[in-house]
Image (cartoon, rainbow, N blue to C red; front, side, top):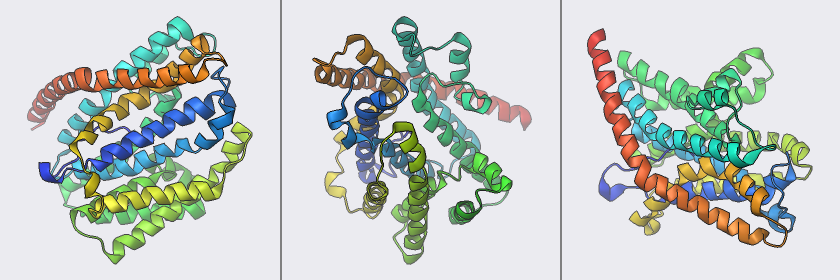
Length: 367
């Protein structure tokens, strides 16, 4: 959900379809929040879209698609990279849009959000680190929870893999096997304290998606074979198991029903789409124009929820709710475009240059 990678091995093989999937996943989350979550729970929105909201209640699964894409993209991006290069790449890509989104969201909350939405200065400052969940500080916007999951993926999985590779070269398949074995064991042993601890560090509740993304990359890099098909089937079943296990909490929270069949269907569709991409079967939609949609995804995801609900609550009425919905989505897309085109590239490049200098000096001093 959170990468803005330029996915390519060379310009002719760039996978623009993933930019499209990323955008559609983000849009599904936007519709889920605006048309279902806002009025169904937690008193977030004055506007009710009950007549169509039920058709978008599965939009939260867009985040699951984000995690599959993250596994694919990050595996591609760590090819021939050191720990230092990976650190610089992640920080320079993730933080610029995140910082601006926090500042914009906080400003809107301070001016118009009370009493439903509140944020204090301490909360804002700690949120800027992206590590607020580690010390139980509330996020400025609830959508940041997925960044916490992805940060664990970067730190505990990819970071450990790159560090171990400095000692002895390890095949990526070994990482996939070992993480998948623990993920399977967690399904049966999640009640044990040891596996609750492992889940905290190895995100075993969500690991199947990241592992699937890594397998899809291996297929893209080489070719599909029986081994990878078996591994993908295992990850898919684990993904479906955990998704269905969350139904009870969803139904209690929203006081409505969720279909295991629909949830399973969406997840299977995600896997099929990524498999088609990995096997080069969707080249007919591999247009360079799609990157513009991909660039919108990260700021759109970060900005839309609380700011959108505040707009609904301040300006929306039952008589104009669809007009406000349409204009809010257009506004979010426009702001996301401005950020992705005029702000993020410049700030990201600046941070990357500075971090490279700092990390190089640090390594030289240690050496």
